[in-house]
Length: 84
Image 1 (cartoon, rainbow, N blue to C red):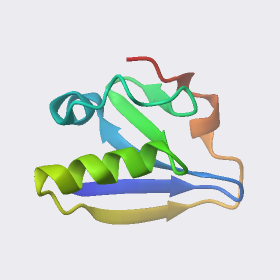
Image 2: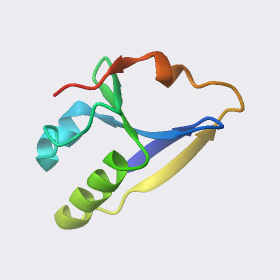
Image 3: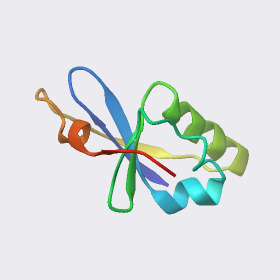
């Protein structure tokens, strides 16, 4: 599974579809430090990304990360706070 990882000078987020979180059974465990827009969820890199990686490991899924970096403030910071 390909996961896009977006970062700015201060933080980073992994983008996944909400259905991935639901299918892995972790949608209700994601913190409010993550963001959402449409059907995409942007998991913050400190805790929520670790949660996702652990769930992938349990499911036998090896994700491939694609990095995207900006030297400006990421627009992800203005997305709606995550809620299950």
